[in-house]
Length: 199
Image (cartoon, rainbow, N blue to C red; front, side):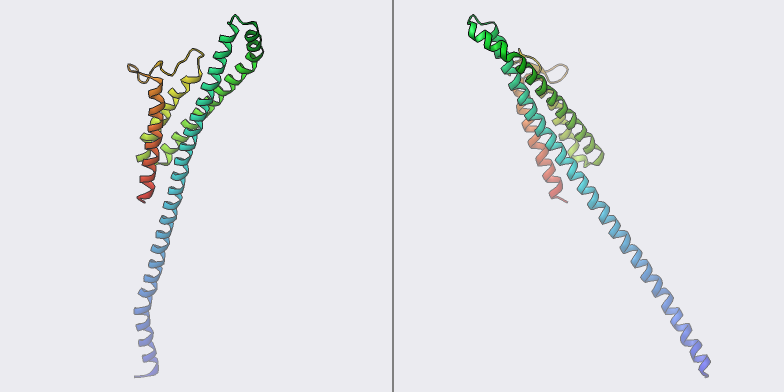
């Protein structure tokens, strides 16, 4: 056997073994890159879902504070109206002096409540887009109750024991709305923890 024949045989053997080995390495590298890409996409999605969940909770808390402030401003305005109807001249004068600033405070507080509710609705919509599906129902419940929560600051004749329509045919005292909002917030937090802790 000549050197040329041996060289040809060795070259053929390397080609038979080497080409599939290079193909296998390239395939393994491609599969590894795809897996890394999927993991990065999953991480990005979870981060986005977490941010959407935090946004819902932040908006719900802001709405509660805004509604409390609106209720307080409305109560103060109610007291001023009562003082203006008083027989005591001094109380009437003081009430008249404070009325404009109290009306402005009540209007600003009510406006802040509307803005906070709009932020909650937008946060829930973002959560509906981002997911996860298991959090959407409890977030929507927060928004529904948040809409009712705004009733507190809309009228100077409003009382916390007044009945409000919670569905088309069902009425409950406003205090029920407040407690249900707190319960819906707690449920949303528990659902969020459960989802993100199970990942």
